[in-house]
Length: 133
Image (cartoon, rainbow, N blue to C red; front, side):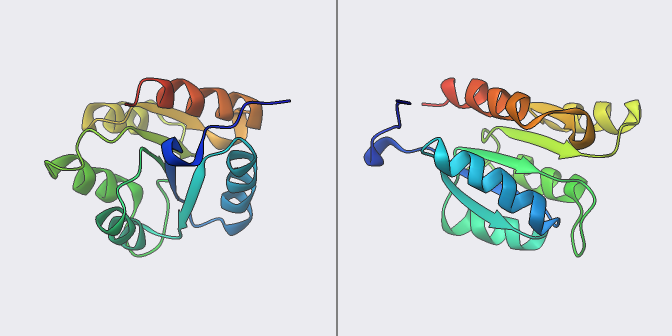
């Protein structure tokens, strides 16, 4: 039997991802682990959700409509009340310039969706959240 966190200490994860199937897949896996998971389909919606309910972790795609992940990450990191929220970038952009840009902007981690199995993704999320109060 897997240990699930008690409701009162449940960590909240915001997935900002325009691929609905992928976002729901991540949500399903994370729900089963006892996390509270919210989904936004673009950067604008994601920022609005952060403003109404600050998450413990953000999983951020880069290529999205309305506001891309670079701009979303920039907005998150320039706000004093949000700048310390860990952000894991999950994208198919694999150019070293994109990776460096995100890490320089304050991303906690970066992975290529097509290269990382779901189990590795879950390990990354758990690792980051273990360090969050």
